Length: 269
Image (cartoon, rainbow, N blue to C red; front, side, top):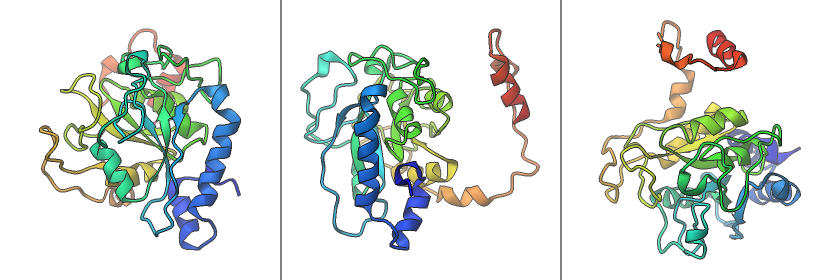
């Protein structure tokens, strides 16, 4: 069984049935990183943290975009300017992940200071699209999306200002979500545009996306723009019938120059 190719909910089923352990899954992910990271340039730094022996809720390997503070670890925003900077505290999202037992894999490449949409202008070099090395993975969360697509992480965290989760997710064939503003704390995120930035999940499927959003969403007094409203169980929305739901698609989305394959896929959906 190829543990690195599984979704989180498949891995959790294996844990419950005692057919796999977090160490098994982490080992498979680490082997994938060892074999392919130089090829794709996805991780800037790999974190060597011990796997907890205690029972955890979600011991799932996760990549972290290189613009989120992790206490005592280097965070550079893919820039030479911040090389050597070690965060003095954890971002709230990192705190929440640690509390549930998530296995932090490493810092994923990105466009420098999130200024870009292709992950080509990182100080540490271009990230390649796992589906086609001649193509970009999108950006600015290109490393995060590529990590999931290349099975070098089960989950990933990105940030989105004007498409920086959604576009690379589309380029890499994974699921990315920009949550509603204020839904996920921005405390500990190195900002691009504070009135637009949001941290969000990147996963292999929509079920995993809901699981990860359940973990990272919620009010945070450390973020003045955080919404003080209850967090629903997003996985329950996955079983609701969407029959009769109307979805509006602005004509402006079909701009001149859109690729025919993209237009056709949207229309068929």
